[in-house]
Length: 302
Image 1 (cartoon, rainbow, N blue to C red):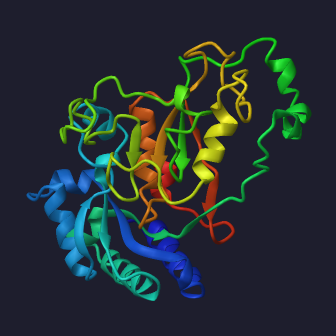
Image 2 (cartoon, helix red, strand yellow; image 1 turned 135 degrees about the vertical axis):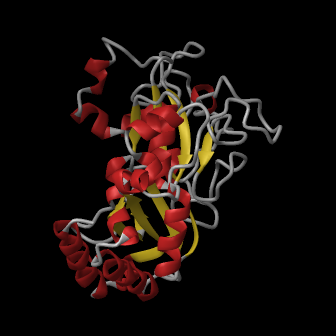
């Protein structure tokens, strides 16, 4: 690790010491590809030794291996990102301090770390009005959406990833515009398309690591999905910005990605890569960090 990166890590640690309640359980670190190439050990072995050195458990790749997209992930260095598990809060900050001490030495392990950070807590942004009728969606008029609809009301060729809580795929105003993964057979317990995810027919619950629970425990994702692509001109509920013209399959498609699951919050970095890998042109992210000017490099890399 370069002195500049080491100094930045120490500054981050000092900042987090004053607000440990913003820190989650995972510690993330990126390996230096040149150091890995020069070592007799592979990346996974080096990552394991680093985790042992900072008393962090279960080291594994942050962006999971993918038969379909591995070449592209490696081209962007995503295969060099690892994470391990601490206890959260002050314990994770303490593990980050050990990481800083490790990187202060120009030995094999210290030189192998090019970046390190704690996973930060993330919260939902407050939702806008959830009134059920179009004439109460006043922000549409402000945005001149009705003028935009003279040009287009949406297209099924556009896939929008909603990285949020889940989406109610049975909602009468949403079910026509849910994205379908063409390479996956639903419910067979197999990664049919080789993208690293099992049963991701309509998206994936990255928080709870499952493709079979895409609803989650909150309505926020359904609200955001409705703003994007609730069926328009169908005589039901609200109108989506790109919900189509009322004819079948005319609206944008909603890819469901959960960062806020039933029992866990997380997976945001990997979720963004999932969306890009699987055809989403746009990602909707109505969430943010709990402290001003604080962010995660792994999420920015994604």
